[in-house]
Image 1 (cartoon, rainbow, N blue to C red):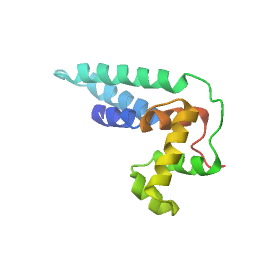
Image 2 (spheres, rainbow, N blue to C red):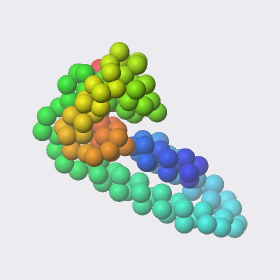
Image 3 (cartoon, rainbow, N blue to C red):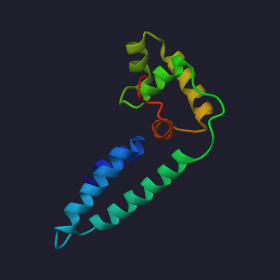
Image 4 (cartoon, rainbow, N blue to C red):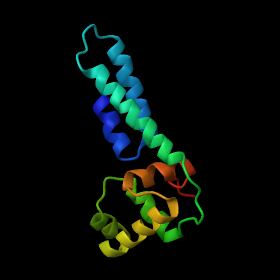
Length: 127
């Protein structure tokens, strides 16, 4: 569960990461000798706090366009830029162009940060 929490955190799925960390900590509480797992749990918790802090920072000066929102919602998946393009009938270069615009507009520098920021702003749900 702790490793799953770490992976989810690194991919910007902060709510799911928090839930997995909580479940991992519950399991740890039942173990007499958990070795290095408490250290891993603390590391994941620290990473999660940083990611949440980054997701909450800044102000969105310009909202993403509809095309960018469509790409942004796909960024939350495991799909590559080429796969996203295939699903949306766009070239990989167009997907990357939209991704750069999304990063600029959300004030982030990575896919995980874009997903986390978008989740905080409520941009991942289709309306």
